[in-house]
Image (tube, rainbow, N blue to C red; front, top):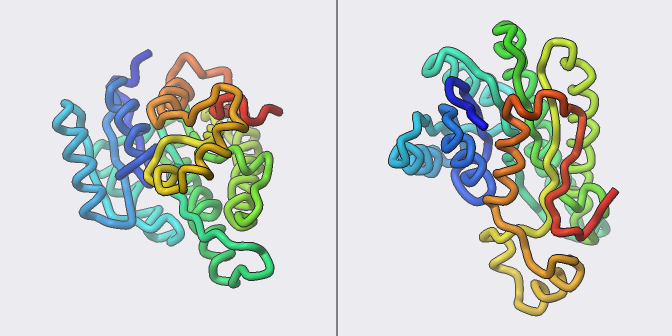
Length: 248
């Protein structure tokens, strides 16, 4: 599986699953433009990729802002002259029960997680279609977008909406050789899960047939496959990486 000659944009690419995805794409030969809300964090992640021999660019961007999404794509094109792969990974949580959830907690999560993916996909599709060489969009969802989770109505709604966006886009651009898929991780070893109390972690593990949390590298491997030519006949799909916690 080779991505040599390809250029990828990864949002939320400075840490966790996003950085693992950027690393997997770079290992396959792609050049990377990655963004985070912190320009320093994005630049540091790009330098870590460069230390591994990759071509990488780190940028500050808030994907909830359409202008930032456009600037991210334009800067990538200025640096690398093309764009082949977009991974919409940027996401936030603002957890709370619905009866206590503030309007801005609902709206902010939807703006980043769902509208942000829309903004970036719209910006990226223009050069992808102009190149006439196909393209790949991979949206990072979540197992809770399918199974729900109490106290996360905003996050669940954003990830469920991302599935609908994935399927609609896949039908819109499939005839132009662009595939659009989603990867839905379950509970993955990240800073977020590491911060959970031990008894909460154990409770989640008890729901997972494989008996453990997944790793960011395991999610990244699926994304890299979907970005490759080997996955050219897969589109409009949601690939679950959850250790058997939920299945459709």
